Image 1 (cartoon, helix red, strand yellow):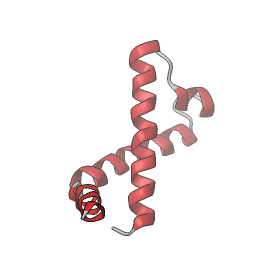
Image 2: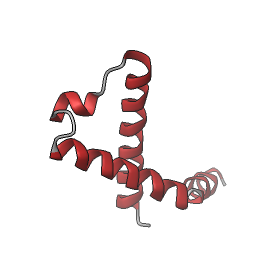
Image 3: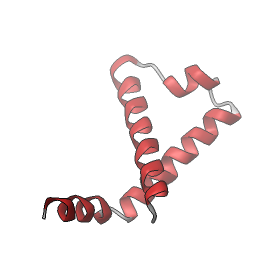
Image 4: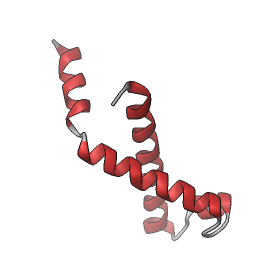
Length: 72
């Protein structure tokens, strides 16, 4: 996975995490607020966030490997 895809997956996963934090803490869905509840754009964002989380889960070692190589 090259840097662009890794960074995109990380950004989308963080967006999903922040959104779920807002839902849990304040019952506020930012994605639905911005794009409409279950609109096509909201669904695309949810799908991209889910795929990014899966990609991050399936390739978790890249972040640790890069982080460790920078410390040497």
